[in-house]
Image (cartoon, rainbow, N blue to C red):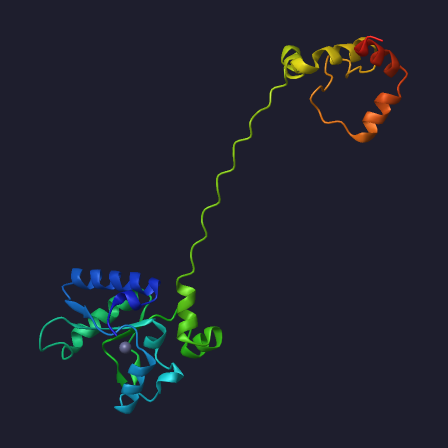
Length: 222
Ligand SMILES: [Zn+2]
C-alpha cells in the first residue's frame, strides 16, 4: 500500500526529511510502497519475489517501518543506479538503512527504519504488526493542571472575628443570656463559635454546668 501516513509516525517525519534533502540535492524522488498487508505479502510470496509468507511478518513493510522510493521520472523509475546510491546516502545520513540485499542484490528502492529492532525483535516484543501499530497512537498524557496558587491567609482582625461570630437575630438574646449567665465563655478572645456545630458530648457538658440553671431562668423569665 502507498501512503506515507501508513508509516510509523517517526518514520513519516524521517521520510519527509528524506524527500526534502533529496529535492535539495536535485534528486527527484517519489515514494512508493509503505505499509504491506499480509495479503500483499502473500502475493509477493506467490510470485517468487519474497521467501516469506504474509503471516510470518518477515518484511519491515509489514511493520510500518519501511518505504520504497523511485526516481520520479516516467520510464526511468528504477534504472538509474547512481540516483539510488545518492538517495541511499541521504537516507543513511538520517539514520535509516539503505542497501539491504535480497538474494544477493541490493534492494535499491528500499529503506527501512531499525530503531524498533530486527524483525525477530519486533515479533518477540509486539507479536503482530497490529499490536505494534497500537503502540504508535499512544496518546501523550495531558499536561498536569497548574496547581492553584496558595492563597496567603491573613489572620482576621479582632473586628472581623467578632463579625464572623455574630449570632443570628433570632438567637441573639439567648446567646447574650448564655454569656451573661457564664454558661458559655468562649475562647477568652471574644470568639464563641455561635454557628459552630455542637457534638452531643459538648451539649451534655453544657447543660450539666451549674450555670445552666441561671441561664434557663434568665431566658424563661422564671
Ligand atoms: Zn521495500
